[in-house]
Image (cartoon, rainbow, N blue to C red; front, side):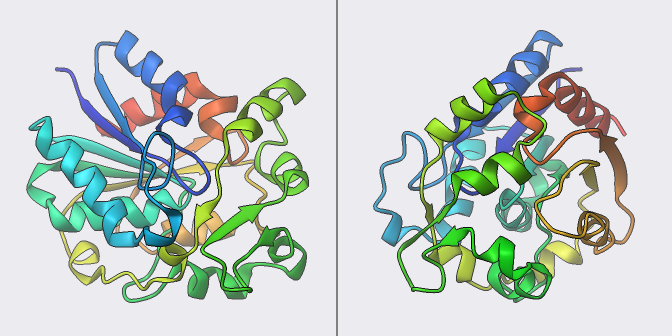
Length: 244
């Protein structure tokens, strides 16, 4: 039976980042959709107006417009915040939520609050605009090459960097009311990328996964940008999670 995958990007990306993974999922007979969150990709909302709630609305709207059921909802990186909100909003349509090397934000906390204690001053120094209260935050090219996509070729790095966009800062600062999600019965999987070094401590990702009661755990030998450097492994892992 074909699965319905809905794929949610993280900061600075867009629906385009899932193209390779979608190709492999569809070649295997599944259906896969990706959405541009507000102020990303083809969505031209003023970044200053973007909110966490609008991110959630965009994904819920895609699912409802296509009348998708038994959805395998996957989110990468900051997309973890979004998929948790979607699963809380429409749990009846969700088969499983898959966090792909993604943030797991505690109830009534924000990404900024949660990441502050674990982000080194050096790493924080590569993020521009957050401390200044700017409407968008950017990541230095140097940091992206060395810590996010260090396992990709120079050409691949260039391709991805050329498509990145400034990330709206407000969703990063907003608290996420997720109590109902964490107490729900929606099954959860976590994909650990074993070479993800965007934080100094690689065990951070395992601690994120441990915030769930009983997640299924999957591992891929890749850095943070797994959908680019390991699209086949990423697709196969999502399929495996769906059929757990």
